[in-house]
Length: 276
Image (cartoon, rainbow, N blue to C red; front, side, top):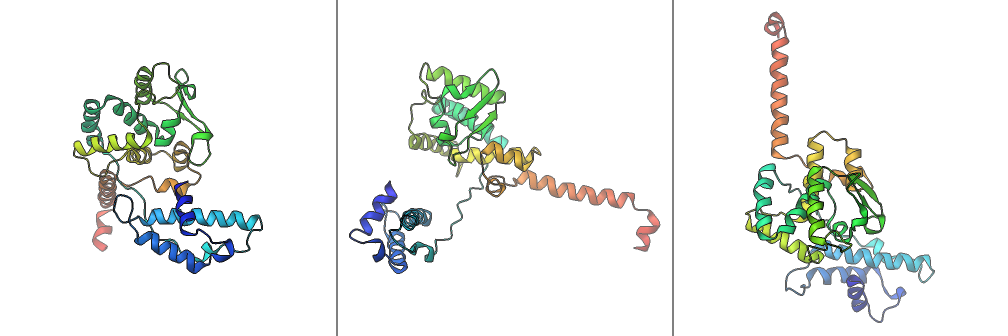
């Protein structure tokens, strides 16, 4: 809705036929160079989302014979790398969780749930107790609350069950899992980010926990297709953006390589080594 308001304000009084690729370029440039309400420069990713919304409007217009061409197709988007490569180490987690309990106890349960299920922030906000099967130790995420419209079921480990039990206690008789937290989506992120900063952790957000979940699965040898399904991704390519090589993993890799080299040298006959 916010993007539509921006588009309507800029193209006010124009028909579909009036809007050319050059005018769309002007829109793109003005939005990029303009300032936000906070007085900061607008992100390229935000401008790309506005262009995507405009393109969708034109696609619908073409499908319904309001115009023949989509001028947005001739306008290049900004190249943006939004991948977050930050993951929590085990040491950081051990030090961070007590801080969360001290600052705001429900945040600790939220963090543990995210770390052990990889659930998205928006999914947590909409999740209801009817979707939680404590007896079967499963979490059923309805397609209606997922980002891509794909429902999924997640097995719950001990840590996730304990986090849900804690959230259940604070929620009381209310239907939503995070009812006891009593934060909106934005405030939940702000509170979590503030707690991370207070703990001395840079660039740690709630979404960092989803990346951490995925990376730990990969480090544990879980196959990419299972990681994809647990995260609720449509493609392996998207899942690859969530799994990162940690310093410890890379260290183990080069040590394994060195160990293999030493083993190879040990088993090669002496005479053969001398000839070589």
